[in-house]
Length: 501
Image (tube, rainbow, N blue to C red; front, side, top):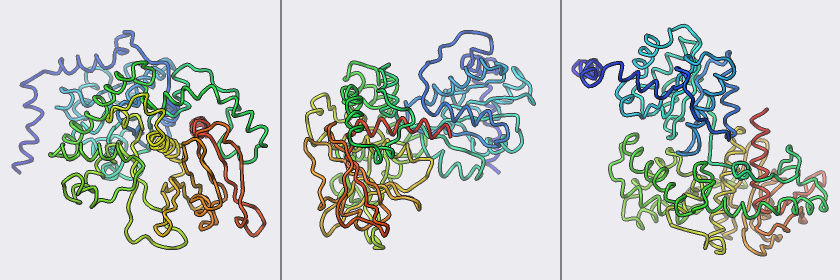
C-alpha cells in the first residue's frame, strides 16, 4: 500500500515544478508541423525507412513497430522522415505526434499522461494518429502502456525506437508476444556509404546478388572487377570511419573518431548502462570493451579475460551480455560439426562497426597498410554485412574451429535449408588450397555446397573446386574467391531487394 500511494502521488507532485503549458511548449517544439512551421528533414534515407513506412500504412497490422539499432545510426532521422512523408501524403499534421522520451521534462511523465494532454489540447481521441516514440526505454511503464494502446486503440499507429535491445528482447516479451514487429537498423552498409557520399555507383544490375556470381563466366567476373575498381578508395575510407551517417561524410578523421567516442561509446557505457541496466562499476565495463576492441572477431575465454582484467568470470559474462543488449557487440557461438557436441563452448565477439574500434584505439590512416589491423577490421565489416543481410531469414551465425588441427572458418551462416561458410583473408596473396580450413569444413558439412573466400586483391575473383567434394549427383562444392569491397557492396545492394519483397 505504501508503495502504491507514493506512485499515485508522483505526477500530481510534478505539477509543483511545471504546468501543462510548459509541457505543451516542449511538444510543440518537437512537432513544428502542428503550427505550419518549416523544419529540416535530411534527404538521404536508410534502407529501414521503407519497411517502417509500409508497416505503418498497413492498417490491418495490429502491432507496434520497433526500430532497433545502435546509437547514431539514424533512428531519429527515420522518425522525422516518416512524419514528413505522412504529412506530404495527406495525413493531418496534428495527427502526426513525435516525442523524444529522453527529454528531461518528458521523462517525468507517463506516456499515457502525455497522450491525455495531447488529446485534450491538440488532437481529440478517436482520430487516426501516428505516434512516433523516440528512445522508448526512457518512458516509465512503456511496456504496459504500449500493450494497451495496441489492444484497445486501433486508430493509433505506433513506431518506436530504442538503442538498447533490452527493448527488443525481454521487455518486448513482457509487453505481449505478437504486439511488436521489429525492423533492424545497423550501421551503414558499404552500399549505403557509397550513396551517402554521392559517389556514382558501378554499372551493374541492381538485382545482382553475391550468390549469382557462382554461375557467372570468368570473363564477366573480370569485367565486374574493373567496374568495382573505382570504389576501392571509398572502401578504405569506409573501413576507417565506418557506417555512422553523421560522421560518414566528415573529412577530418580525428573529429569523426572523437564524435564516435563521445556520442556512441561513452554515452552507452556511462549513461545507458547506468540508467537502463543499473551498472555501478563502469570502469570494469570500459576495460572489457577496450579488450574487445583489441580482439574484435576473437574467441573470448571468460576465465582468461577475467584474469587479464582483474575481475571475476561472472562479472565478465554479465558485462558481455549487457554490451550485446546495448548494441555495441555481436556474439558468435561455435558451430557443432559432424554431430559432435561442444563441451566447453567459447564465443567469438565482433564490434557492431569497426569504426568504434578505430575511434577507441585512436587508429588513423596508418592502419590501412597494417595487414594484421586490416584483417581484424575487414572481418568485423564482413560480419556486419552478413548479419544485416540474413536478418530476415533468422539463421544462426556461428564460427568453426577444430581444436585438433587449429583449422577454422571465420563466419558460417546456417539454417535448416543451407550452410554458407565465409573465410576472410585480407592480405596480399592468400592461398586457398585443399588443406585450408574452409575446404576442411566443407568436407565435414556436406550441406555446404557454396563457400566464400574473401580477399583483398580485386583480381582475386573466380570460382574453384576441389576433388572429393562431390555429392551423389556429381555436383561439386563451389568456392568463390571474391574481393571484400565487392562482397560488401553486393550484400548491401541485395538488402534493398529483401526489404522490397
